[in-house]
Structure formats: C-alpha cells, structure tokens
Amino acid sequence: MSYHRPKSNISMSKPEKVNLMAEYITYYKDLVEAGRVDELNVKIPREAFVEILDSIGETLNQVALKLSEEDGPVKDFLKANPLPPRMKDLLPDDFRVFSLMLNSLKQWVSAESASTDRYLLGVTARATCRAATRKCIVTGHDLGDDAELHHPVRDGRPPILISKKGHSIIEGQTRTGKLFE
Image (cartoon, rainbow, N blue to C red; front, side, top):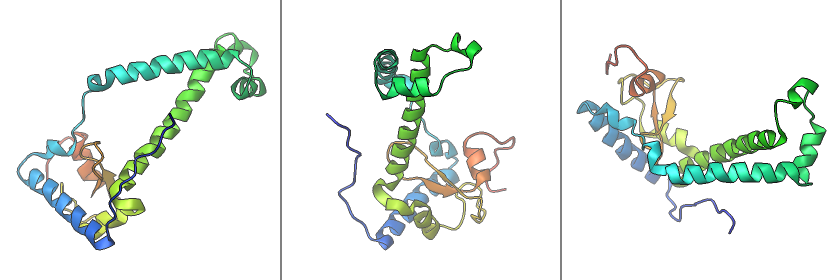
C-alpha cells in the first residue's frame, strides 16, 4: 500500500477561514486571560507512540543493512561518495545508509508537517492569521514582523500567530514569564 497525504474535503472561502481563525484565536486568548497559558503548549508524551517509533527504528535498521549490501542506487551513491581513508574504518556502510535515510525521513516529515498546516487553511495560514488578529494573545503587543506561527497542540489544528516574546513565554524560555508586560 502506498502513502497518500491526507486532504480535507471541506472548502472554505477566505472570509470563512478568517472567521474560523478569529474564533480559534479568541478561544486561546480566553485561556490566556484565565491564566491557562500552559494550554498553548500541550505535547503528548513520547510513550504514547513508543510502539510505532520502535517499529520505524527497527525498519530503518533492517533496510539500512539491506541497502548497504545490495547493488542499486544507494550502494552506487556510497561508492560515488567515498569516505576519507581513516573515516572509512569508523563509519560502516549500513550506518551511512541509516544516516541518509534519517535525513530523507526528516525532509519527508518536514513536508508532511507543513501540509498539516494547509489542511484547513490552504497555503495562506500566515495571511489568514494576520487577517484574524493584529495582537499577540500572550503579550497583548501588536504583531510585528517578528510574529511566529505556533501550534498549541500538534493534532491537526492550525497554528496561531504570536510574537517571539509570546512564544518564549509559552515555551518557558523567559525569566519572568509575565504576560501582558
């Protein structure tokens, strides 16, 4: 079975998207005002996905070993990009293939993550967020050029636009952690 990227069957107009985002931002603004800023940075424990992550790791190990030994484009790549003599003894081909696959997987995950932002909003997430609000819901400051997209929960919901300072507060990266300074 081949992979198919999830796509929404719902089509919204630009005003519908802006209204959706305005309601969504208000939802989180209300949480911030209620002192529940931690709900803007919710992460599922890694243990929830340990089985699939172990399976992926095992698959990567198995495929790396197989591809490092069999003739084909991967082995050809390794031959075309030889290691310096001393390093050749330190980096086995199966590890090199594993590293190449991790890089490929990282690029794939990045592209798929970006596509989740487009699921509801299309390619206009940042513009739609800007049309829905002009102020950071965490600091209350105007959103300038330093605004960032932030995902309160990575479960498919779209990102919200917040300031860099607001993002630092949410992530616990500021000393004061004060809201609305």
